[in-house]
Image (cartoon, rainbow over all chains, first blue to last red; front, side):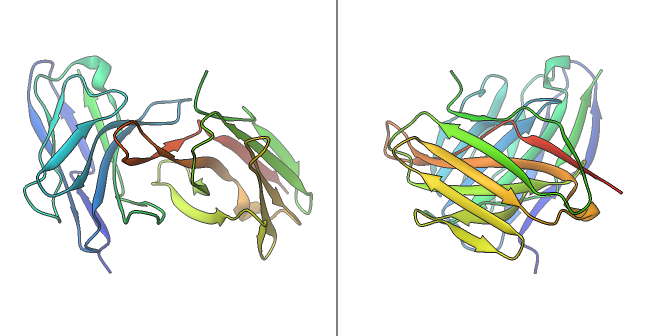
Length: 111
Length: 113
């Protein structure tokens, strides 16, 4: 049972570099979301999607882009990495009224 | 004010103790409620949903008070394996009618031998 697959698990970037965090789910869920989690803080929503072709901003969208070309995939792009983006990133998927299922997380360090 | 607020913790309790976590939410339009568990450096996982009538799953009991916008989680007979961070999660209807899961910052529990 794959569930939500998130890659990579670890990444170190230099300031100004760009990269894409991958997220894929095989549960045919409509909703997909990206969160970041910083020490002592809860999960904060970056971007979300309610279906293929539809995305919207969450609480902390600046510096990130997303797209949802298929139901399965929801990549997160860092346009120009900054040290403030050092965090743990989680992708999640769910149906309309159910709980969310999370990927294993990406630990990103920007130096 | 945060949309979902939890006891800050940390809670350090001996094995076998009963411990309760509280959570309040500010949006009265909130429709569904959950408790998640997050182990150190791992992804959050659903512990249990919270129903209006209250619900129990083994040693865990969740309660919801919509009038007071309050959710609780009770853990009886604590085990060492219960040590984790517990996240209160509320499904909130946003301005665009989308429903977003909003997470509390979590309460850390350590069960001591």
